Length: 109
Length: 126
Image: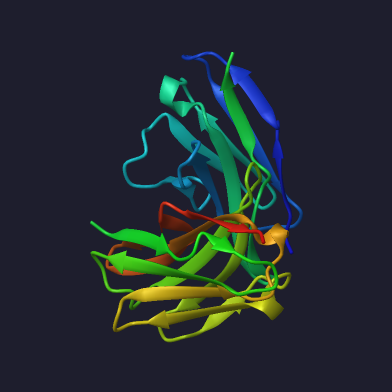
């Protein structure tokens, strides 16, 4: 399995600040990396696919970058509704499988 | 608008089989891959397995011996069965659709999951 490690585990910021979340893969996943937002009691919501492509309807303040093993999700200016848990996810053809990072909790400072 | 809805028993006894159905409305399940995930309370997401509408499947190796995923195209449903359950199988179970995106007349695998059901909590307890 390809492991994904997210950092930090918790990020405390204020509305209006910039958030930078990291995801590192145990081996190259090329650009096959996605980011999700999950709020309590809700299903994950796709934000970014292909490492840097925003899903339809996702605000422009969300951006993704990286390739190979190191990826970043940036939220340029935090809105109150952005405080949630964020997961990165990869799907590989070899070794076959789908894995998620352990999540980064973005909390209000 | 495409919607996914999981349904099934919320309480399952240890050693029995957990059975869930994902009903898809607003779109045919044909031409897409469909996946099951689960999330134990307070923990992260785990992939269970996926299926193509023609019946091709792939499962998480850690669960493969206990999991069966199937499709019923006539009902537009995807089913999940997990046998010999224990308390460790207590989780919110989600079905989701594989993401595809189209550009300049061609469609590509997005290697992500763009539509999710609301999830259903299944508790394993006697």
